[in-house]
Length: 301
Ligand SMILES: [Zn+2]
Image (tube, rainbow, N blue to C red; front, top):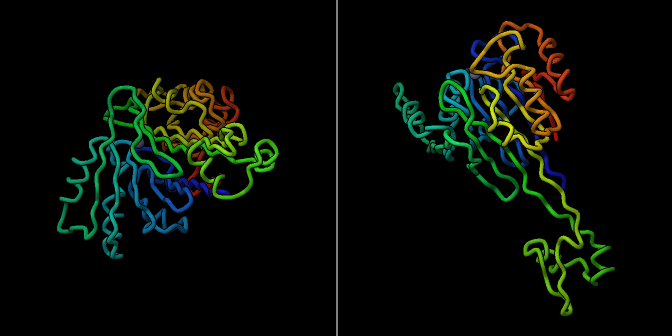
C-alpha cells in the first residue's frame, strides 16, 4: 500500500504578511491524519483557499508563541465551534498549557469541544517524542530564538517488505498468518528452524520531514534534521542582513548540507523581498537542492 504524505504551505511570510505571503502555517497530511505546523493569523482562510477541510485537523503544533505563528488559532477554534465540532483538538507547543488557557479565556466564547494542551520541552538538546501513531511519530527539539521555541519532525516508522519468493525458497514460508507474525515479532520458528525478518525482507526507510520554526542556525537543528528527506527551514534574510533571531539563506543551506538532508525548502521570508530568487540563489551556491516555498505550494511524497 502506498501511503499518502502531503505538505501544503499555507503561509510562507515572516513577522509582517504581504499580499503574496501569509503568516506561518504548514498543513501536513499522513494518510488519515491531518495536522498543522504553526497557525499564524489568517490560516483558516488559507485552509479554505487551498481547498482543505479544517474539521479534519486533530493536532496543531506551535513552534513558539510569537503571534505570527499562533494568532490564527483564535479564529480557527471559533469557526470549529460554530461548525459544531465535538471531537478534541490537541495543541502542542512550549508552555502550551499556559497559552491555550489564556486563549480560551479571551472574550465571551467557550468551545464546546475539548482543546487539550500538550507541553513540549524547550530547553536542552534532547529529541523528544511528542506523539506517536502506528505509522509515524512526531518529535521535537529546542531551538534558539528570542522566546522558548522548538523544531518538529515527522518520521514514518521503517517498514519491512517481505520478499515472499525468497522466504519460500529459503525456508518454505508461504503467504499466510505466519508472514504477519514474522512482521510483528521479527522472528518465527518454522519446522524447527528460526526465520528472522531481516533475512527475508527489504527495509523501507520511513520518510522524515523536519520544520525549524524560527531559529538562528544551531546544533540542535543539525541533530534533528539528520538525513531528513525534506528540511523546511527559516530563511528570513540574505547573508548581508544581520538577524540574530533567524537564519539566513546561506546558513540554512550550510545546515542542510551538514545534516545530509535531501531537500531544503526555504520559508519565513522577510517582507523586504518581493522576489525571493535572490535567497534561493544564495542557498544553492552551498546546497543546490534548495527551493523557496510559496503560499499554496503543495508537495506530495
Ligand atoms: Zn516568525
